[in-house]
Image (cartoon, rainbow, N blue to C red; front, side, top):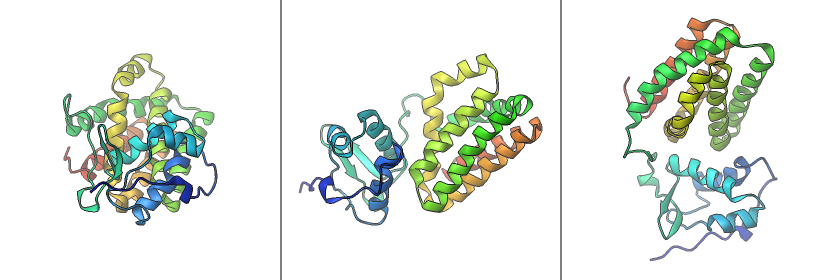
Length: 235
């Protein structure tokens, strides 16, 4: 039996918060609180963009986060549907290229060293930029906004590579960035453990801000090991 599509005219956005956060903040809330039923079809990306007054790329990014976390499923040719509670699993899109364990192993070396270099080269303005990310993650945790937490998590890791000041390291990061971002989101499907993610990023920040390369590298590697563990991968 075909499920009824979601009628956005029946829903209300609290405000026009930044996208993609604003797009899926309420979708996420409705899914988790039962306002959207398992199997219910969402409008197309074009319809979502038009009805919410946002861009299609923003809608696409928002749905990607929700799909990675297992809250929605994409059926080619049919659309996007709310996932059934008993089948919600994080999605790994790169199974034809590598496993999540492969990515977490690579991140240990790549991101650990990036954090080490960032600690040696950071200045006060850069520290404040990093701190805004962790503050936003803390705020998102307290408000139950998983999407904002995921977006700021990604921004934090991007910034660490930028602050490493090494163009070769940055060039190594760019081609695999999407896989690394996906691996950041996989553990977030465990909603009851999101506080661990925030605390780990705050520890990385303090290691970098204190200009202590050993502490920064250790904090980053500890975070990656813990994130892998939350997904069921032992490093």
